[in-house]
Length: 542
Image (cartoon, rainbow, N blue to C red):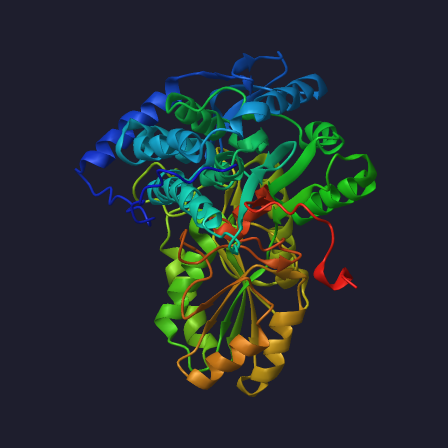
């Protein structure tokens, strides 16, 4: 049974304050030192299986996207044998990890959160995020430090809130809900774009699950350091096992295993659909029906009403689109602008876009770094070449991979509301605009709702309350995170629970009890205090 005795009141959960990094500040100096440490460490990243470092000799370089000649080390690729070992290690650990008290399970995670917020780990993990993922100082601190800390602490609070949901009892009995971890292992698959998505492995583990974690190939170093932090904080061996490498190769082993209990996934829509098909095809061979929890792609919108405030709209467009190179699932990528506002808005977007510095994100003035790898850069370069050929570029539109994988912040204007640029996910700092006649407000609401299969984030800008209400009603299922007069990015743990539906995922809302319950298997337990010793009911008497 899950013991609640000795439960203590927890501190308020987030948001953890980000640092200013002003010129001459201590945090700027300590970050510079950490950047130098990461650049020169020469990491040899091994798989972590049952507490053992497993090196395979099949190595891939860890590179810096904004300076791809710079190597931070190498990572050893796992295959079928290593994945099976990781599953076996997780299965062995599940025999005892899930039976510990919640305090024992939570302790290493809460300790890691404190170490990350207040110790040298903050600078180290931020620096790795800046170099491996090409994030600016601000973007890295909000991600690798603040949100990671907030997710960890929220997981503990949400676990205890869940445990508090108990059934009623009548005199003569005592009823309880035992929130067991799942039977089997959780397969956590994390994306490259957020270090804090280590929560996909951390969250289920707090509940008593054991995990096989497959990080994105372009985020091996930040995953490695995240696990070093947890192990330093006291996480026992075997609870979270990390395998690096090719997704299809590792996934085929994990998804085909009879003890697969859940998949916790963030990544592309096509990959998640493949996972769903694979699990469906194997469904008769599993010990239990695996839980599938996924957050996938988006084609996120900003819809401007003629009454929108021009300046706040323009700032939301550039921040929502260009921050972290548009590589956030929530990034704005399609703009619906009224014809009456478009000339002034267009001029403002051109001005703001041209003012932005593209380059090395470790330099203070840089706003836009590099996209994550050569494959993504090539995809974006091909798309923008088509946009230039079709005369769609308002500003930007260039790419350069001579030193790093850079894509210019770009605004496009299309005349076809179903243009591929406005319907297909690109994952780049590119905002595609469709200009509509002011009188077509109701029609454009339908366009926003029906033009893409996604349903992740969106924003409406209007000072007319009736227009806001109309948009809220018409777009109710268009976005799992809906913003009024704000950019559609920047959700905060505990404030804007993140996740979408349609082709954007299962909308289980990361960082909430709704997400955590997917990794628990409740058991109803009745204790009878007054045993019945005669099978006969009163109505049976003659």
